[in-house]
Image 1 (cartoon, rainbow, N blue to C red):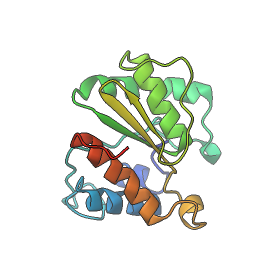
Image 2 (image 1 turned 135 degrees about the vertical axis):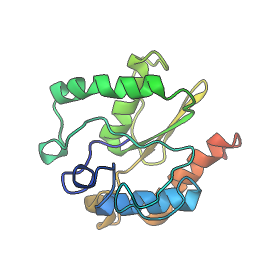
Image 3 (image 1 turned 135 degrees about the horizontal axis):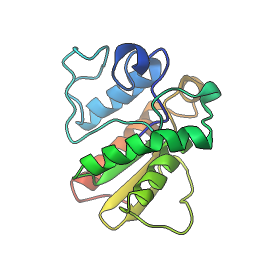
Image 4 (image 1 turned 90 degrees about the vertical axis):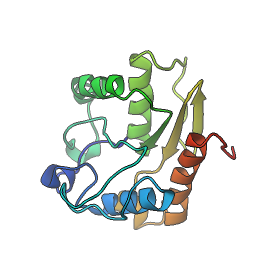
Length: 173
């Protein structure tokens, strides 16, 4: 789960994380971990197939300066709750960026799927388990993070390798 479709990526191409550098990072990592049949996503008709993976966002449009208001999160939250309700076999959720991670946790709590008294702390690679549901935090693959080296390919790949380990029932954590 990310923050929102990018104005010049997902909003333009019709597929989340497609057509921008963040998407290039995401689909390459998904491919390496076996969640995608190809390492790129350029448009809705490019042949991309995801396996054991669903991509969504907390918001339906990019907020100014990537800083959503509580009202924007609440307005879009009903769509996210519908997605959560429709996805019956979710076992691992990867939150891209602090906002995506925290939005995922809050939405799953609101949907009655998990419970916590205080929001788990965001840190890249952090893992939070709630019975049969595992949440993994990752820095967002934005240019701000990837160009500065705050997020490297090995760091990002490790997040999806960890997700795969949890899905296969033998995490190393």
